[in-house]
Image (cartoon, rainbow, N blue to C red; front, side, top):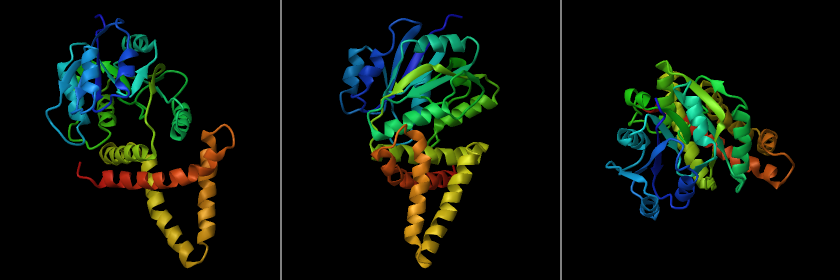
Amino acid sequence: MKPKISIIILTKNVENTIERCINSLPTKQNIIEIIAVDGGSTDNTIKILRKHRIKIIHQKKKGKYLFGYARNLGIKHARGNIITFLSADCYAEKNWVYEIINSIRKYDCVGGVQKYPKKYFLDEILQETAKKLNPKKSVEGFSTRFSTSNYACKKEICEKIPFDEDMKADEDQDFFYRVYLSGYRFLFNPDMKVFHDTESSFKRYVNRRWRETIGEGILFKKYGIFKKEFIIRSFILLIGPLLLISSLLMNFFILFVIVSYLCFLIYGMRYFKKISFKILIYPLYFIPIRIIEAIGMLKGYLMKK
């Protein structure tokens, strides 16, 4: 069967990135349509989509946590036999479609690498983290490194196993794991690359990690995945406050702060190739983020769904 690719992009007020995303996609190479599922954009997003003659699907539901609903809506309107998800703030490398087609011939689902242009302090950390997490060679089987920012699968799978529309976060990881449990073959292809051109402000990063870790807590409760992360974050929530209170009562608070700072400093050095001011402020940046992640995962675990 000839591969016919439908690319689904979720949009909402993405005028700063959507045009570059669209322009990175080849006009041929088996792409039969690009579908934008819009969540109610109030900027120039719709105007840009219309200029490029993109198929626009407007969400009828409004509110938060509608990623699963939006993805199912896009799948419902897709004509291709291969469904591909791409984030609106991503742009693909030239051989992206070739790698999808080449992989999907042998496997049911394929995910690829997200690269982060180093424009911000956070981007440098995200880029180095990605290098450590992403293998240099193709890897078969399920992994939590899969993301709907850069993912493709056969449409029949999405029709049999839809996204959970009630998931508060990490609906993509929930979908991937259910597909994996159903016996479908996964491949992580490091040559299937996109650039994730995020606006990495501290507030945006914290909000994203809060949402993601809530999802990880839900998934740990449902399937037992993210067990290592749950143990570490539970340890932070249990031991951290005890050490802080003890340090205050026993008058070694300053020592506690210094040791905590040095621990995060050593941890952060693996993200930077040389000593710089960025390394010195890394602990101040990420100590609160690690605490937020721990609280978020616990909240997800305690949620009813």
